[in-house]
Image (cartoon, rainbow, N blue to C red; front, side, top):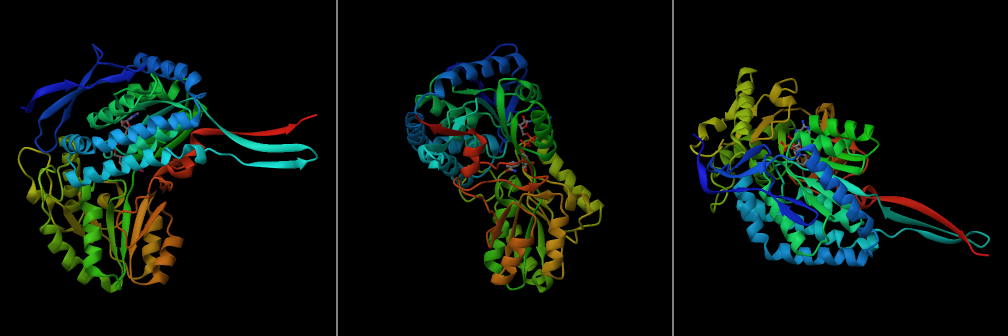
Length: 486
Ligand code: NAD
């Protein structure tokens, strides 16, 4: 029997500035991964809920686009202040529904606030170019205008930060927004949107819905939705890209990952091991930037694996809300079973377990310890597929050139890192790898809010990346105006 916390709340929608809990919708449980207890239930929006939210957003757009950009940003300044004030509370909700450690949640909330800070610079960011006398008496300028109703569909692993890659930029540009966050972790984005509402955002500028495929499909096919931002797994990202693009919408769809960490023999091993631990097992491996394949080059393998295995066995696994815990549970029992299934496949397909996370399963929550497999090949299931859990596969190679070939054969290209004390190796690897985000002695190469974020190959479908200057291009249309006055 599934345990239930005493007070079960039903998560609300925000449509046209009013919070509502609709009747008669399918309800799905939201669990606390550290205890397995049901803590809330989430209603699944129907196509008609989506239609109402989009129409509301469209009505609001007709007014919001004419609000001066400096005034639009005032709402974001107030939002930032509220987020700062409630940062601890938001981090607590995040740990409770997602399972990541409180330190990780605080870091995520810091990142979400940084997105708002960058979007506050929209008066400068939206500026166009101008040149007088492009011909006799003729001046030319470019302006950026908002595009209309934009939609955001987000994953479970960063419920505070990922929605912020989208809506602060979109609304600062003068668009309106419909957000459909992950149904597994709806409480964090709902609390964040409550604060945005409290900051004085006019009704309809941001609308929040919950749900699954029906809601997403309704957004993808709605004629008033002009742009779709998606972050999630590769199969869904590909589907979103193809469906929304076929409807003539602008799309950015960030997908899954299988990230390689290349370690040269000249790396600083103790520091490298700490970085690998953070990358592979931080947030229980549920990060799109998580290191999932370790590639020791030449003589690196011996000293690296000795240290890494010792450190991994000592990793503190437990309830992320407790002090000293380094790795929390997986998000749901289904996901925990899926990751365990990958470990079983690794053993069955002939990889050598150096650390087996199944030995550290704990009662109650969705716990699995960190796992390291040696002698993994790119053909094995664990060497090929995104696991999205605390499982690190070791693929040994002889030279840096072989490492580059191995990385470039992967169908994914989200993030990677090289650990070395050689500038030459770092430069060669950074230049030749076919990957969107590269760390040099950095295990989680997460670009800050003012830089763009996205991978290559099957990790990204679209042209313009998330946040940074790309966000302004994505959420605006450019216009060129030539003028002559008689
Ligand atoms: P997911 O693809 O299962 O879900 C993402 C969103 O899509 C959710 O809102 C979900 O409700 C919706 N969705 C799920 N199935 C759908 C379907 N068939 N049709 C329409 N909508 C659907 O992803 P997840 O499990 O929530 O998140 C983990 C995945 O996200 C991992 O693959 C991870 O690598 C990826 N991710 C990528 C990035 C990045 O920047 N590339 C960042 C974070 C997470």
